Length: 619
Image 1: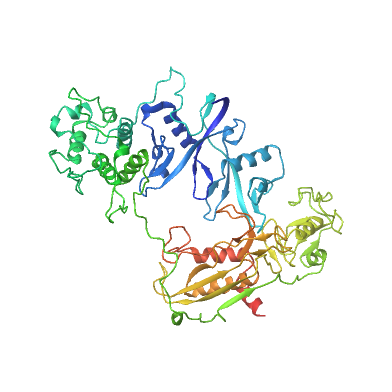
Image 2: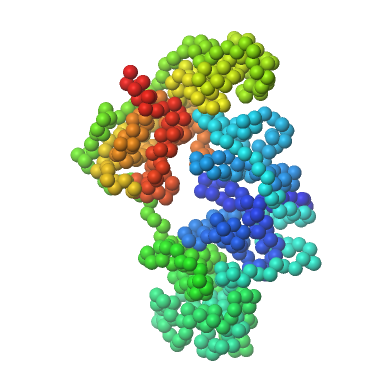
């Protein structure tokens, strides 16, 4: 325990091991439930505050986010930040993704960017916190240090995250202090979803294994009809059948008990009350959840969830453990809560099968691709430089400006009418000279452009730092390897009328060269050979031809830090997306994807590769 003032940000752990923040509105909602204490039921239905999060429930006992339609569990945490930092001021920093929508940065990154912004720094390098990006505040752009690709960023104001003062509990502890005694706990929600969740949490807290029977329901039920779920069966025990009926003296099945409860009790506070103390006969009819095996827990969950199903919550197609019939999301959610409370692994659904590779193909079935020569390409050492000195290279692309405009050079952030502010190794040109790029017309200090060229690949090409127009032929730093390509007699999802182009990339680990981030240091190459797929259509073949140009120019891969694993000095994709799933699209890297071919053509164009490039390579 510590004494402090802080803003509370609720976060969830994604598949890449990064803690992602919930929005301020969602964090306020979660915090309100936490402060209400156990009376609120211990579960948070996120759809009540954000309709996009309708499938999600947070179980505060286990600190997990549960997705009801798939059964996915993700850890959540309650984290604290300085009230003077970005979340305490309602500032959110976001970057523009490939779909044109905006994605918030991790809280740690957003706080770092906001701190530099408040200090009026012209830019901030995020390398120190593990990201190979520079944020340029003058252009509001994010620049990839490895590829020089730029994305837009923005700063917007939102709600301030909830504030706490005084004694702060540990981030994972629950229930938290309900706050001042004068503040009564919030009334429990009476929607069917919350009724179900809170009733089950109450059952868990009381060790109940059977459906809860509020007083109003129990008055109408004979004592002999009380539902008892037995411990794991021993010799001679009567098992439960697939409908949940207990084969034995007890005549009423769980579904009947719940229907009677639902019909005789309105959805409200009574429906979520804990089960009453045992009667005078001392028979509790309860066993600990930990004594139930997976089968009994699932059957119990099915019975409990029928309350919600009967309330009109729509079903969604989810495959259950023994078949493919549709089940209600409530069934998935309640099963996960019960099983996680009992310390058992949650396996609610059988997800669609990941199909990374096609069916086996014999050597005789593999064919060359019409209109594409050969079936493989190799890259070895770095291509020869096409210029002499940096000044001679830039001279081809620049026009001198004798009377520069009174505006900033976006490289050094000094006025163009003043000398360059670059402080690195001194180029041989005068710092006050100004030049205009011939095609796009953007103006910079020539001194700054020479410095930028020296810090890049030095391959005879130049890319405008403002509009990304490429001058010359851009090449990359891809390590040596092999690219194979051929036809296989199978169709991709969404392309039933054509065969498939399979590309196989092979790059071995090695030692970094002078053009790489850490010359002389070894680099790893994970996941090779990598198999990628294109439809054998007219546009698919066009993409393949341009990918061959990109491979020859060493632009498909680079050496850097993996965004998936966080590993540094490893081979990574270089801003040209590939499809690595053959028969599914579970990871987002498969088919069907109606926009993929157009998107990859745009990504290749951003690297300076178009249909004209194939003619240049032929020459």
